[in-house]
Image (cartoon, rainbow, N blue to C red; front, side, top):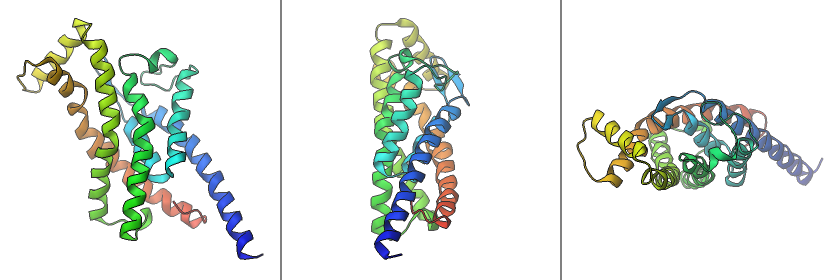
Length: 224
């Protein structure tokens, strides 16, 4: 078999593996959404682990496909949103911005990760502690679109619903912050309060898991 044939075979295998991973990660993201704690109208979930995993393990277009597939599943009524919810209403509800943000966050994480690894001459299989720190910073950058879309759409609903505003004010007060600006209150309640878990739990676990998945794939001849 010539080199060209071998290359095409490996490339074809890689495409198949990426599609399988994309589907698997879309379902995993839905399963992680069921590990939740409701902080009022916004669920506190492990979904971001699936988003970051998609960004780490998949090339940009496949990570986008994975998250798009996840949203399609929800739109079709599959109970893969937090609280085993499904349906188009979930995507256009107060928390729909977070879900739509996944379409940006996963491929952005993929782009940042691959650029960094190319610059450093590394890959997921041999990351060092310093690389983990960098990837955690990248995960925060990658999740910013999710936070901003989530905040924007939730604010649209909250400014017309005093129940949401009261919930946000009470939540912010419960963590010892005294602030009277409604937008700042909503930003803290819908973004800031979620960042520690998303970065130091979801993203950290995703980095650790992706390292071992990448080693398994490389053993099978697929480079991620």
